[in-house]
Length: 593
Image 1 (cartoon, rainbow, N blue to C red):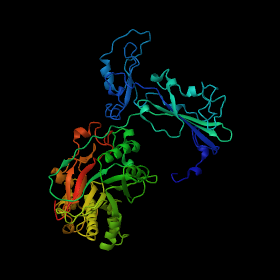
Image 2 (image 1 turned 120 degrees about the vertical axis):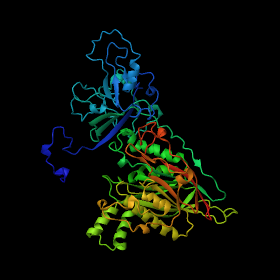
Image 3 (image 1 turned 90 degrees about the vertical axis):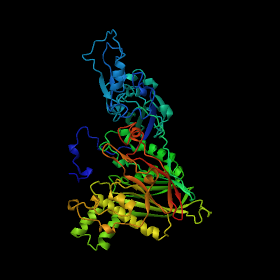
Image 4 (image 1 turned 180 degrees about the vertical axis):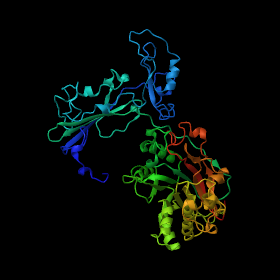
């Protein structure tokens, strides 16, 4: 049944409410009318911040106490009768000031306040949509002039509703105020502005026959209250390391896992508001956060392919950056572009791109199994190894050259004008530390070959989400060039599948790497990923210590700051579950650190 085409299904079994069109729709064109609603008093408690503030921070589930409901007093003997409150806390506070009044209105059975959905400060206009001119509705008047037809054609019919009828019933707070809905646009798209904040928007859309001008369908939908732009992110001060004399060019680099939309679900983050998880909301915050720190190089992970094309590249290009993208090697999750990957940007006035490559770990696994181990990929052993190692992760590799090259000086006689940047996102499964170690080892080996082929003095930075804590074998390999034989990550046991790692003595590399945050701050942060399920360090910026110097790093905000507007990340303030790392680096020569 699941494989049958829609056209092959038995149309006779369609229910009366089925919306499958039995006949193709006639040629038609649309008209649109946008309206701005009256100002709304969302809460009757005078001390409520939401009476005057429409910041997303104030309207989040966290700020509202997680109730998600507004309340209305129905006690006719209370001075608060028919007053609406945004949450239970405001009602309780207001109740302390209420007093008894005489009323001729019959007392309701219960004085318990009624609950309404927080988003429904008015009835849903969508329920008042008209299916067609032949869709009769009781109480509808026959004197209807529909909203601005494409050719200003007046349409009358015995069963056609009036616009005034469609605009009635928006909730108690709108009683007698429907005339305050003001038309603001007739375009297909409308971008809210400062005048819309604190009000609702309404769209009336109509479809008309091209031949006759007949109204085919009319639909009315309404938004919730328009919120203001999220306040600018708090400035993150950089801690400066002890400076050393000499050195060459400086640059600022950031790494940031921005949380792809395909993973930003309420199942994964139940404490976050649905609207705060939407990509359109988060993108504005993320791009502002990145641009505001003034980076020269930006390494991003979990960049969704379609969003790179439609949002991110254009925004970064307008901000003065050029970039490259590499998506994971798996298939899209549903529609085209629903797969994440890595993006790497550089400021055009600071650097020029010299070389750009990508690394696919699936391809490295195929080479390892077939060429190095000499196994048939279709054999049981070969297939088992490939199945364990092929996790679709990727890495990016670019060589950037300074746009304004450093000249030789007394303190810097042999200036270096190029830097190699690697950006990666390793496998996320916590139960597969050996796979992450394998990926790290092969990434380092690829970089070793790449750097050596271009001279041993090419500065190298490796940034990204390594999905590994400072206690992991991945961290040991990067920081110490080796892994202790007794480390649990290299002794996973047979229950974890086939062994994918070489002999422990072969798990090594020649790079002299330092962690930026550990070098500048003396230790790794407490966390770079902060959710209800996990709080810890997963993201790092590594640099070659013989020709790069870490000048500064921005400390990760403490928990009090991170949870100010949410129980965990993401929140209305932080639009990813990771925290961006920021550092100033300097190119040096002659082994200076």
